[in-house]
Length: 272
Image 1 (cartoon, helix red, strand yellow):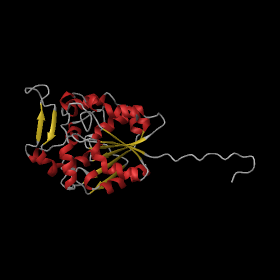
Image 2: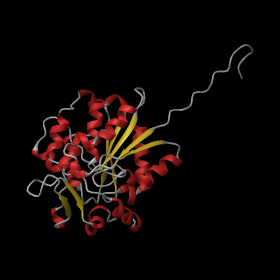
Image 3: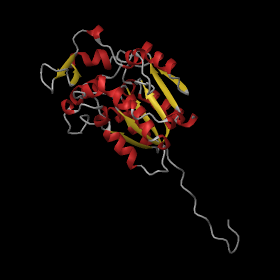
Image 4: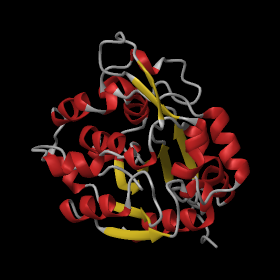
């Protein structure tokens, strides 16, 4: 109790951890629905971003020819945050590229970058090994892609979507059937050209030494058919993060092991 004549000072509300979740190619913010519910039920603040041509964004993947254009919704979101606010930025699969670019553009607004089965490549002098380890190779599954040719049939493909019959064995082999059904209805062609040859050139211009001050955590997925465990391990060895966690999961732990993924995200956010 305050003594006579003293004014009682208002209690400061504790700062809630703010998670920002970024999807991979062909999915959208919808893929995080289980994690979003778990976080909100735990009193955490969470934002899920739709990149261009994903989720409810109306853009056509065939019209996106640069990574900067594709990733603009995340950059706009980060720019809109107050200067004093820091977030835990989480990227899945190709969303790792989005996270890396954001850490270079907004290093002071990111308290932690988390890569979930994601492409984690250090910007700068990229080697052939960087490109090999960061790009999924699904050739072992046969002819799995539906390709779009927005620049004409005689030009390189501009978009790609895994055919419906291949989605479960490649992306969701350990995930519940209802989540596979949801994904099959919501997945859209991804902007292949924006995420292939042009992406690294675009992003190298963003190199910012301040990004190295952002701690990173990698969450490996042991039974991943998209970003294979050996690719994940190679990226981790080449650009070591602060912590590495492992999930007994397919490429989509937000479906197959949501409670464990949620626990690791909390652990990562509180341990760094």
